[in-house]
Length: 84
Image (cartoon, rainbow, N blue to C red; front, side, top):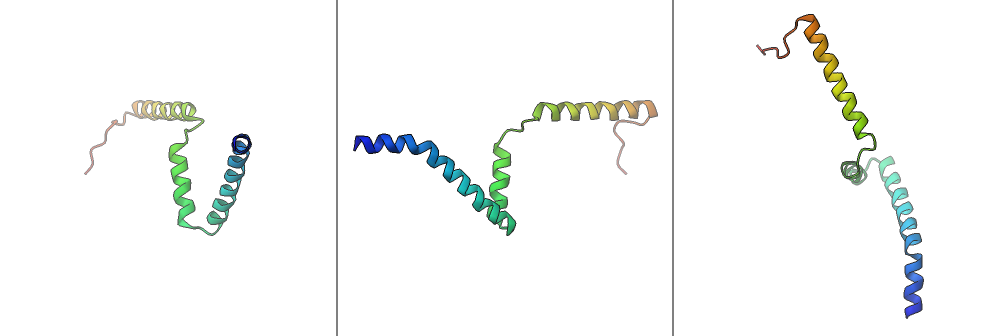
């Protein structure tokens, strides 16, 4: 019994890897058929995984806002235009 448990523990990483590949294949087939389950799982994964370029994205947004603000200041346009 102890040997069987040790074998299963040794194979656990490989079993997880194979399950991950099979899950990816299944999700790909669902996505090709445009199933809502694949879309929901994709959205969930995208929400939970971190953005690898988060810092670059934040810097780009801040830089763009500064450019727009500078352009508005040069043109004399008010920053907040009242809505009619």
